[in-house]
Amino acid sequence: HYLPGGCAHAFPATAVIAKDDGGKKEKVEFTFDSGPTIVLGCSTKPYNPLRQVLNVVGLSEEVEWLPYDGWGMVENPLKGEVETRWKVELGPEMFGNGPLLEFGGEEAVQEFQELRKVTKVLVSGAVEIPAMAMRAGNSALIPLLRYLPALSGLIAQGEEVTQGTFGQFLDGPKFVVKNQWLRDWLDALAFSLSGLPACRTSAAAMAYVIYDMHREGAALDYPKSGLGAVVDALVKGVEQNGNGSKVHLRQHVQSIDTSPDGSFIEGITLKNGKKIIAKDGVICNAPVWSLNDLVKNEEARKVLNNSLPATKKRDPRQTWIVGEEKSQILYDRPIIEKDDESSLLAKCDTAEMTGSFLHLHLALDASGLDLESLEAHYTVMDRGIGGDGSIVDGYADGPCGELNMIAVSNPCVLDKTLAPEGYIVVHAYGAGNEPYDIWKGLDRKSKKYQELKEMRAAALWRAVESIIPDARERCVLSMIGSPITHERFLRRPRGTYGSSTEDYLKDGSTPFRRLVLCGDGVFPGIGIPAVALSGASAANTMVSPWKQWRCLDTLKKKKLI
Image 1 (cartoon, rainbow, N blue to C red):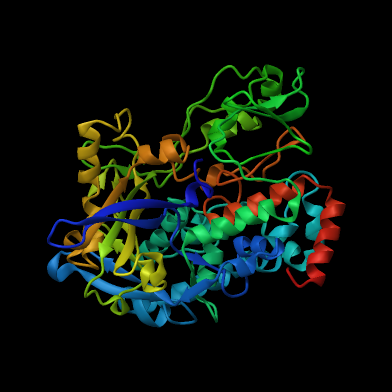
Image 2: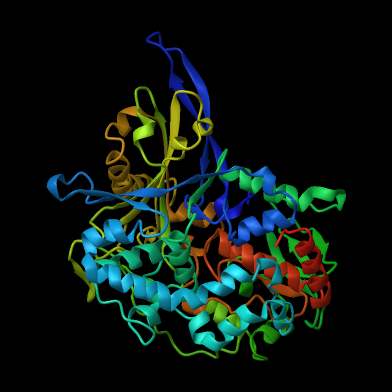
């Protein structure tokens, strides 16, 4: 990557703005966040894994978190009488006594209360077991023994529950949600987490978010100075203490290198030919679909392929069906030709790819704009939370439909320093609901590509204009990011959001002791807190469990966990 932060970086852009009637112009620089705009668990306990990592490396004070109480909802924007506006407020009973009762009725409130009870058992592990206690491989259980009550509860639930999908709490056997409005809301919530409907999203992730949103003291968090402040703190964490560690940019990794017989991971080779010898091993956070390309040694590839020659790269499953007029997300896991699931390469190659993104970054003239009357974040359902009733290949439109859910981040409501005086920055995006195939093969310099960007961004503009009606007149800079942008700049195959829950690797272990995987293809999957956990787990795996145990002792004494 050319900037630190990967898929969650901040980037600068310059606008040339006319300052007076005489035609005088000046350059004004803006900074935009590329990644997620809603974060929970950073300003108040229980802390999420990202905040835990910042605590442990002694840099939690580097990021000031700005808590806020909820976000705005807009359904059917700019559609007259059918447009609906409401707010999601966090905390006990706020949701149940507010929108859930209003739109779902008493039945929905009762079902939601029961759902919270039956999923509570999945929350204890996330709350009581810190990210620093996680590790991959056969020794994973050793540090978890420190948290035996929580661990026992998770073991009693079984792997199918703790690492399975939320479908068991939506359609049985654990629980059945009957109220349609509540089902649509859970789908919307799940889609924002995983790019998948609730029935296919991680049960553990859904249970934790339901808990975290409705607990005493619940708050959403935004980092002062933007997401770049978090990235800067993490970079500082790597490079501090003078140990020679450094974050290198624009260093394309060509291969993960092994000994000639393929039995030992030696290091990596960069595209420029430079070789880096690994002292302890290689932690790979590249998308799981890249593993087959990174390991070149045929004997090593056999090890990763269950002792069979790895001559063929398998095609990944796809979450979206592309239709002539509208594309549709699959509510069932796509079936492909059966492969040997004991092969790590097969799992990585065929892991299902969720949809891609569409972004609209705006810098707006804020003259006369009443920021105090606006929310810091909105979710705009372009066709309503239940969709428009259309059917594509047997699947009904809904909250997970193509470009239906649009997030609009309006962070200057919380931090006016994010833009030069007199301006604001706005980020609207569809996360996981933009199919890649409609962009496939387009030349990003072509007229057709530019026209498609403008056409597809209409829903994003509509979302912004439902909040700031004269946004186009105020606009001094606009940028549209497509799935091709994601694929090129973020090195994401097909610009994907990540892999599906069913295809998350259970942990980052591989047949090689000195090679550990992490990132959004490894449980717990997609999202900054989730990848912070898998990253911490991978780092812990590089030391002995006994050293990790002593480290946990130290962290506990310092009250950092």
